[in-house]
Image 1 (cartoon, rainbow over the protein chains, first blue to last red):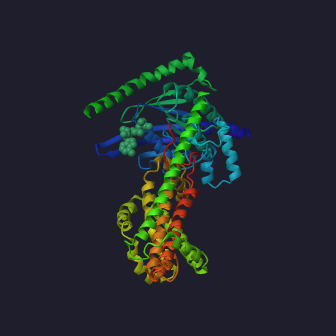
Image 2: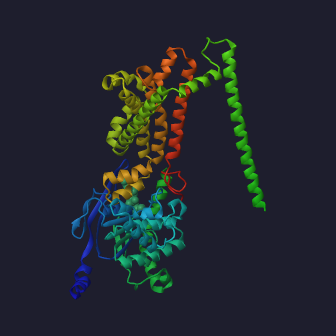
Image 3: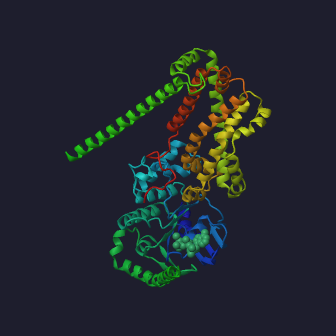
Length: 280
Length: 273
Ligand SMILES: Nc1ncnc2c1ncn2[C@@H]1O[C@H](COP(=O)(O)OP(=O)(O)O)[C@@H](O)[C@H]1O
Ligand SMILES: [Mg+2]
């Protein structure tokens, strides 16, 4: 037992579970070649919470889709526990930017979906789905259909559904983008609490700087096209964290530091979209 | 108080609308009956072509007392149901294959469109050679008739499925069988329901068409026999039975196929943000 903890603290903790190694992805479109992700390398430790932040169109979703296996055709390598990731696998769970709950299933049926597809018997999967709904604070809404719930509740269903399979790695693409600020903060608290409880390696894509600081161990700032890693900011704020520490001086310092780097990229993105609009 | 008043008013308006709809329906029916009787008595048509409704009612009574009628009825019902089930199932499978695989869709879908718009009776001689003049050829023509609308409706439906649903399936690495059973089919309930409702009527047409052309049993055959005997009241009674059968089938399918979800509607649409 003591050996195990020793191992946990040394080897296992420092050994990267997810390694992104010189990954590049270009799309060939009618207007020519677009390099969405350019030579990105990153080692993510077991249980680490990483946020990726960058202007729209810088390749964040593309990077996530490569890690998740939805894009299998790219240059470079992505390794999970030393094995190459090509194609989807249940040990990597994804929460998408877009609405993705099934409207024909109730909340609990949505959450139980992956377990049902894997052939888990009814009683067990319902019990498990109930736990997960409780975890995301949706007890009492088991039998509601998505159209009867708010956007924030639907996104929580999507998160619970992804957690149902107990993925080792959790990928979330702007899961809170469509939510109002208060819901976003409360849901952020919930996610960080769950992640600390389950110790999942997590990659969160976001537009929101304070959200990234609030949740992450490290924040990655990406450049505007081609998407490269501009800087990695280590967030050494103490845990457990909650949205209440957002008033602290240290928190504000991190936000200012990240904005300083991001600002340049964001204005590049803005200029480009203005130029595109003018050309049209 | 105001709210209650409004509710009462709405209810009254609805009741008024319902009662006027009923009135118009009754008036329309009376008009149809009256013009039928007038046309029959006017002497403008060949004698006996438009028999009095009394004669038709008598024909009904005779028909319902005749055991042979029930045999014809059972055979026709059997042909329609079996043809409908076979044709619709194959239609769903082929529609999925065309919709899911872009290549097969591009190759075969235009062909299917052309075939769908040709009258299926032209295949009857081939089917008669293949299956004989028994129920086989009737069932196969019925199946063939309802296959096309189902296949085309499902193939078109696949392309309107929200891609996010498919991405969820892909990210979970679901097998093709699971994707079809748990994502495609539920997402395709509206086009499948449309295919079933359209298909039942068309399968009925297919089966009766072949009964009328060449057969030795079934309601279509019985109607043709009455025609050959110039027993117009019985023929009309049989045709009314056939209409009722087709209408009832359509109604039952509409009631039985419930779209999943809270309002039983809008299955492919996303919930509002
Ligand atoms: N399937 C695709 N085909 C062509 N271009 C694409 C495709 N997916 C993404 N892109 C382009 O790659 C760039 C990065 O897109 P994306 O990863 O979605 O950005 P982000 O998520 O950071 O907003 C964009 O310029 C986008 O237009
Ligand atoms: Mg994106």
